[in-house]
Amino acid sequence: MQSPAVAANRAFRIARGVPIARAGTLGIVRLLVCDDDPSVGKLLRSIYTAEGWEVEVVTSGQACITLVADSSPDMIVLDHMMPELTGLETARILRCRGYTKPIVFFSAYHGPDLEGAARDLDLMPVSKIDTQTFIRIIDVLGSMPHLRAKAHS
Image (cartoon, rainbow, N blue to C red; front, side):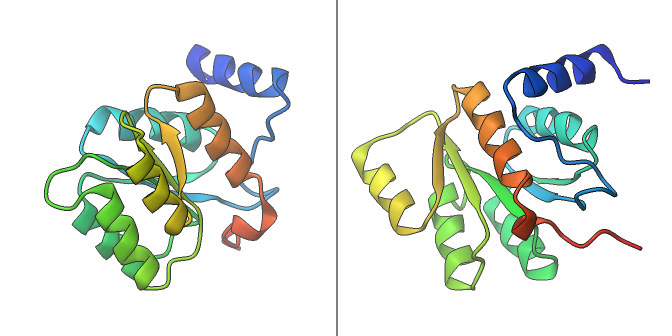
């Protein structure tokens, strides 16, 4: 039985025509969330594990780079303002090392300099404040067949 929050999220997506990935039918989507705020990872993990996705959460750019080198996720959600390495620096390193899959880049700040760098690195910038758009983008990317990892037999 689904929790009320999962049921409400599912109804919200269905009402807006957003595809829902299910484990075993469309394959498993592997999402990596990188944010120094643990509540963001907790939120996205609760939403997407309920849909059958594998969700890994890290809290630093270096941890993100290490995890991607070990096991390339289908998609990354990357915060910009983090200590040590910023999201932009992390994305630059990932792209230089050959990571070509989608990176949803989110920040409370959106200026021309940040938008230009995000465009150059082929990132999908989203306002951290606009959670509806943020969730919708992740849903749509997760429904794309070429992004899905092969389901374990």
